[in-house]
Structures are given as C-alpha cells and as structure tokens.
Length: 262
Image (cartoon, rainbow, N blue to C red; front, top):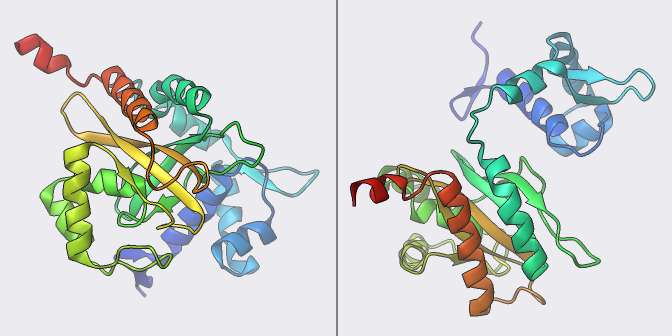
C-alpha cells in the first residue's frame, strides 16, 4: 500500500527529517517528550523514528540521560559539504557586524518554504533576540524572505506569490500587490525590513548576499526589538549591513568574473 503523501512528499520521510532536524539544530540534547512537543507529534511516533535514526548512525542516545544528539553519520555529511561553505565564510563578517552595532546577526538562504536560518550570532544586549538555526521564515513577512524573493527568479517568485500569504501579526502584508510593490523597492534599494510583520515587538533588516554567478546565495539580517531596531532604521546601520553582506559576497567570488572580463 502506498504511503500517505503530504504536500507532494511521503509523510513518514517528512516526519523522520523533522525529528532529525529538531535534534541536529538544537544547542542541547533533546528527549522524546521535548521533540514531540516541538513537532506536535505523539511520543510513540517520535520514538519509532528515533530508533531508526540511531540505528543508521544519524543520531546517538546518551545512555546516562536517554536524550539524543547528532550522530557520526550526520557529522560525516557535514564533512563532505562544499569547501566554499556559506556559514564558514560569513562567520567573520557576521561577528564584526554584531560587534559594531550590537544587534543579533542572522544568516539565511532560500528553501522551498521560506528563508532557512543557517546560523546566528547573538547580540550584546542583556536580553538576546534571535531565531533558531533550522527555522524557516515566511518569504512575505520576514526581511530575509523578502530579500531572497526580490532577487529570485521570476518563476520562483510567481510560485511563492501564487500561494496564500497568511498573516503572522496585524502588520503582515497579505495582499499580493502590496508584496510585489515591496519586492520592487527591496530590489531597488538593496535591503528589506519587516517591522513587527513576523512577530510583534521584533524587527529585522536584511541585505542580499551574491555568489560568483551573480545569484542571490543568501540574506544577512540584523534582528532586534522594535525599541532598538526601529522601523525607520538609521542609514549608518543599513550601510554597515550592506557592507558586511558585500564582504561575504566577495568571499563567495562575487564580482570576480566581471573583473576578469573588464
């Protein structure tokens, strides 16, 4: 009997990947109950998938705590990642940007469902504001998503905007025409903001990162409370953000081909 499919994928595979990502992107070991609560699944379902992931070496169980963490096969996959790894190349400029402005700095890249958070560096304030690596932020209501969509192909942009644009807060833009107008502005000005559009009290400002093929490889964002990162962000912060994104772009080879043919 064929397995039930959800949104074009096999349900059991989706659950297994959700369990794997929940553990892999966590800063601490997780137990069955924690994983089930985070994913909205039953403990029985989570436990069955954990057994398989442990058996295949993608996760390991701590015998002392019975909690789970990344296994040797997950680390092996990371070892074979491309040498020009975006996370590694961006770490230096991200830290410098955080030290300069004090805000949390977040790195994201495009996924089919939104802006996938790759890494973050916490801000210098006593109360840290950020997002967990592995989280996916909606294209239309996050600064990172707007940047990735503004510089995406026409086909991808059409597929995203053809879907429903749900409201995360009363400030979220849900009208397609308004979102399209916003994307035009983002492409023209080179940055996006999303004051209280993804979460009340939070703002983010993002700029694009380009690779050697002039494709948008990711988005670099400042994230903070609306009190310290206001909707009308100052020009100095925007300039610093753009400079850091441009620095990462150069590390990825952006502009290299143009310089050779000039």
